[in-house]
Every structure is written in structure tokens, then in C-alpha cells.
Image (cartoon, rainbow, N blue to C red; front, top):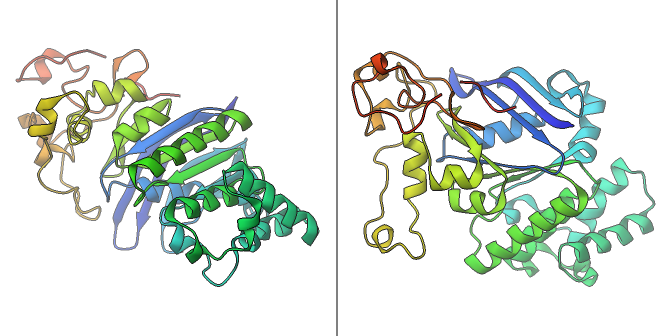
Length: 335
């Protein structure tokens, strides 16, 4: 059964900045979807749009259907309940998300008191249980955020996200600023919780390696659009879109000396959402762009079964190309 269905999602900020442009995504219970891209590609805007957490000036179009209800047309009371019991978000930077003057047990108990209408004693007990579920002693409920390490604070954020037993967890850069060992622990914890409770997970990161190791599927975003979509490991190891290839190659790989001594990057920055270039928006930075890329926009094409990429080198007739032939061929997004 489909847990979340996003269709033709558009988000425009004041001034005409098109942060998300025509995104289609689907997610079922127990599935893990990764969303990757550089800063400014629309990842966090997409995450905030899923629960209508965008600023008041943003214009949103399309459909976001969560458990059969359209989030964009919900009344405020229903939306308020859905934000904890239906879906919750683990924000990046736990120290900025936790209230520094309240003990962490109080902060975990707050949504339980408000949404489940539990007694204070029950909320405290459940807060302790949630802390133990994420690998912290229940006694740490009396600690303030500054008394915890970065990894412990991130575990607290996960405990808060689980407080009202949501069916969907959105993790926006949940391991940012954590060292490699703690990052691995947090990722394993998230995987374990998703498996145990049959949750849907959307994980956002700029690191394809992390997403390939954690998620079932991977969507790569550029300038507000999904430019590649498919099984996470396949996209990481054999990306079809030039942008996804560049993201994958930017990280040295264990056992591959060539990537360690000569890491590849991608010059330039994503375009200003208010001043997008004509044609394929990636063409100013693309190493394999063709003359037609400056005038013709690209949508997702079928690269092979269960894989899509928005590139002229994927699934295009020979007459559309003047460069080398594509690796594979094929034109509908994943559902």
C-alpha cells in the first residue's frame, strides 16, 4: 500500500524562486527513499513541503497524499495531528532544534501530552522508554541538551520523532556534523527502527554513499527537479545522469586508489532558482552537453527497468544526439 504519493509538486518562494519544480515521488510502508543533491537543489524545501512547514509566502502546487489524505488541502486541526501522528521530521543540527532551557525528557513528553492526551506520569514513562529505544539510558531524561554529545542529541531528536508513533519519518541531514563512527551508529539505529516498526523513511543528504548504504531507492535532485531515480546502490555505483555521476565521484572510495589521489568534483554552483537557464538547467555545468541542451529541457526517461534519468544521453533517438551513444536506452517516473 502506498504511504506517501507526491505528484507534480511545485514550490515557489517570493520573488519567483522556483525551489521545487514538478517532483513526482511515491513511498510505501517499510520503504526507505534517499534524496540527494547539493545545497540549493530543493531537498529541504521538498521535506518541509510534505508537512506544510514552509513560510507563509511560499506558493505550493500539486498533490501530497499521505495515507489517503491530501496534505495541501487539510484543515489546520487535521494537519496539526498529522504532523506528529502521521509523519514527523528529524531536522539537521539537533542543538538548534532542541530547547536549551528544558530537559530533554520534557521535550520528548510534550507531543505525547498534546497529541495522545496522556497523563504527565504516562508521558514521562514513555519518554524514558523512547530514550532507551534509541540507545540512551532513561535517566538521561533529566539532562539538558548542552549536557549531551552531538550523537546523543541526534538520538534525542529521533526519539522525539517517534513519540507519537508516526508512519513516516523524514530525516533531513540527520548525521550532519557527526564523526564517522557516530554517523554509522545513527544510521544503523534509523534502519533498525524503520524495520521494526514498518515505517516509511525519507532521508535527505548530499552524501550518495550514505544514502546508498541506508536506503532502498535514491532520487537525485538538481535545481528543484529529480534528475535521476532508481535503486540506491545502482544509482550510486552506475549513475546515468552527468550530475549524479559527479556527485558519486566526489567521494573517495575505499580500495580505489584512483579516486583517492584524483578525486573528481563539479565546478560551479547550482543556478539561482529565480534565474534558471533555458533548456536543460544543468547544461552550463555539464561535461557532455550538446547544442540542443541549451534550448530543450529534459524530463525523466527510462534508462532501464526501474531506472530513470533526465538526460538526452538516456533513451534519446539517435537523431537527437551528436555525441557518443548512451549506455542504455529508454520514459516514466517511478511509482
